[in-house]
Amino acid sequence: MSDQRKEYQFFVDAKRYTTSNSSLTGAEIKQLAGITASYQLFLEEEGDKPDLQISDGEAVNLEGETKHFFAVPPATFGQE
Image 1 (spheres, rainbow, N blue to C red):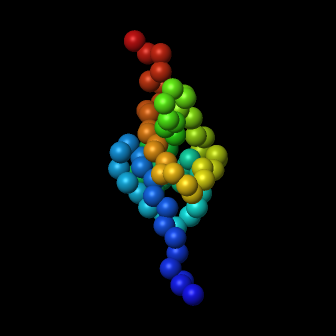
Image 2: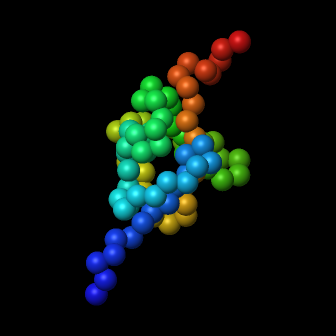
């Protein structure tokens, strides 16, 4: 029996991170990636599906396909 813990990979702004947790909240992902807490976090979806905004308290399951996230500074939408 192995006591080695499974590692889960995910990407934030194209940089790879690993964790032994099978799920993380938006806040935990931002903290691990060193992203400012006020930034918005999005989970990239495939094809034409819209990317999902991940709130700080929302948990994301990291099992299965590798997840790709990106961070956006606050108040950048709709500005001219």
